[in-house]
Length: 71
Image (cartoon, rainbow, N blue to C red):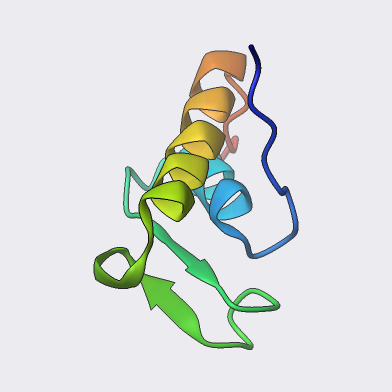
């Protein structure tokens, strides 16, 4: 069974994918609303479901292999 995640910009799934894309490493977090303009939620304040979504986004991008080309 495939689990579905809310992929809204700034959410846990989105931030996990972005960290992978930019090769920043795993650093679970998300934003309550828009990225960088609303309250940032750190790992210590995330639920298990939010952590799961973050890691799912990170791993999906790792498996897909879509990374920022800095050159």
